[in-house]
Length: 273
Image: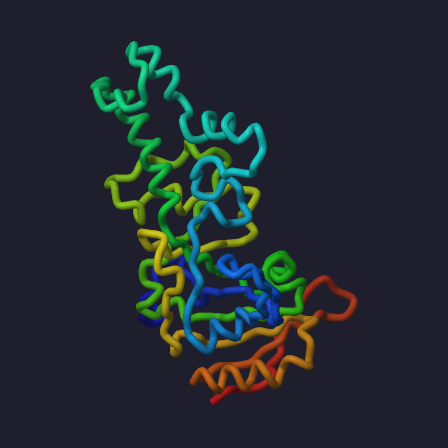
């Protein structure tokens, strides 16, 4: 797809902000702590790690219901967020068991139950979150290890990203219409967030089911790697070797603050051939 053919509003790049460092993580099976360099692994294997929205940093993401915390209030949250309106519906129709809800024929109540069913389906998808703003300082701060990480810039016109959709930012999730089908990938609430998050300028790819969490991406789609302003130079050689080892052909750039200004410029650092 050429620039002239690109749909209006579709960005040229879709970006993934990542830290460039080793993390220590607890193995859930063995209980031991293991070192991982997740971004290096991601590049060497050409795989995105994708999770359901209930693991994201926005508690409202996907409007997917309550998340257990171990608190005595978990049951209250479950009733309010996962079964909103069900007790009233049961009283209205004189039923005493949730299993009897299927007997209800009232169209408005059936529509309400369909919305509740979709809430649970939204918990069982994988989401790849990307941004169309590689220069956003808030993105660098929150997802780029406080400007010490990298921004991976992908070609938005590559066929792999053809199904990516822009997130719509709204004041109220009730502004979002019900989906036209039962495919969880097409649920508009998976592509909607509060206006509080509008600075992310997010685009999403969604897959049904919680597995596989690793989704392979085409190496040729990676066009550039931007270093944060405070990227630690001791990690540059490792980054270059990782990109070469992964078979990428990309530009290396870096964010650079302009003097006496709040603005940045992007300066070339090199090129991986």
